[in-house]
Image: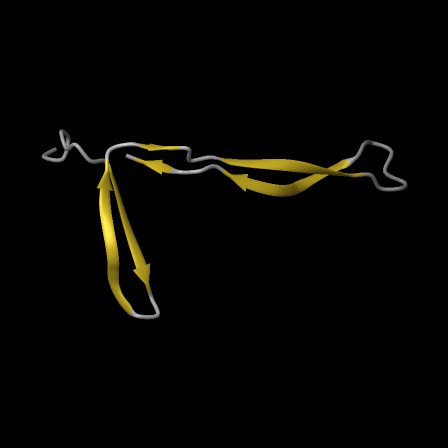
Length: 68
């Protein structure tokens, strides 16, 4: 329970495994916004399928993440 009143809730470390397993840099953040993914369904109509069209996952768009 000693971490209950810490100002930072998120830790981000950037690694380059080609160079070294140690982190290149890192930071601590108290707020993260914009974590989202939007999937647009792709409708496929097949001949002989009379119950309706199929829906498959189409392009996925990711939001911009802001760390404060």
